[in-house]
Image (cartoon, rainbow, N blue to C red; front, top):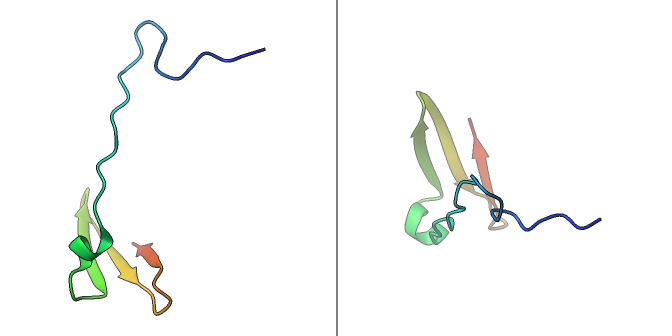
Length: 56
């Protein structure tokens, strides 16, 4: 059985391409960025090994 391709059925909502942003543009010279979302505070942090962690 083969499933139809996503977004091809009648009444489907068009799929938008996600926006891409370089992490250097977000973090700048800092290793942390505070994001306020729906009355919550999140911290996006760059680790010493260069990975990103998002904490509430």
